[in-house]
Image (cartoon, rainbow, N blue to C red; front, side, top):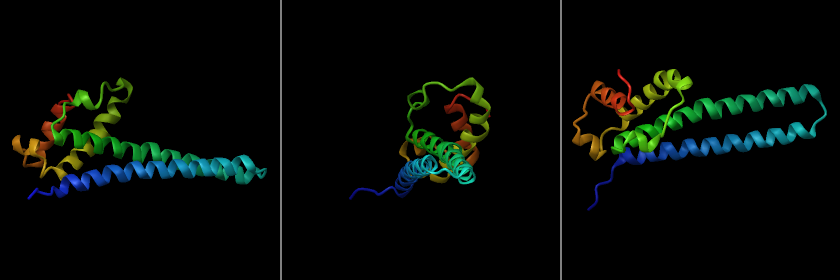
Length: 142
């Protein structure tokens, strides 16, 4: 009988949910843009513009960053080479990558680390061991 890996399944669901959330937000943005185009009330138009900006910001900076961190954690736990996941990072965004994306990806990797054969082979048990290995994987010093 095959062994069902619940953590892998949970992480897969999380990744798909984030993609779905981004799609739904984009759809709602389109609806609001259409409403904005069809109205003549400037005050209402301004409110719609604000709502569109809020949704876009959430989609890009909350959902997008969480999705990137999740995908990095999945690749790390599978044992994929980092260069296969991301070809290059923009130097001007390195601070954000280091402080936000990598930290969040480490948390995700620690939460779902059990059940990934390649990581078990490396014997990463503690949070510190996973964090150190992840930083090394992305080419950063911790």
